[in-house]
Amino acid sequence: MSDVSTKAIREAPIDERVVEEAAAERDLETADVADALVVIDAELRGHHSDFEHGEYVTVEDRRAYAVSTDDWTAATETVDFEEPLVTAAREAHTRQAKLLFDSAVESVQFDEGTVGVVVGVDTAEEMV
Image (cartoon, rainbow, N blue to C red; front, side, top):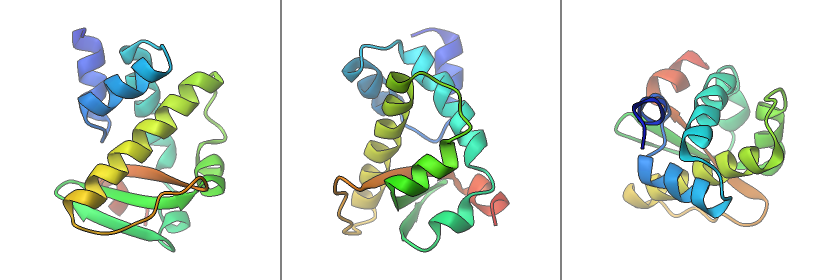
């Protein structure tokens, strides 16, 4: 992995392994998915109150939300990426959220209508 994509992954609240898996499943470059996650992370600022009505957990420096697909779409609708990239980013957020909920021993059902949103705690606090 290049230094550029590694830096982008560090800027997003998603684990490197999760980004790599999401990229591989969609046959995308890891760096492209990492860059998309950084843009989406910035886009999520200001949407905190949209997610607070659902389940969430804070683990170390990240907060994971279980939200409806409609909430995800509304929060990311201005992001201008091709569909496979948006899907990979959504899947990375959902996978990371599941890992964080599991690590906090919180039971949340992620069904077809539920996706994950993961933000840094500092981002979540800015979104209030």
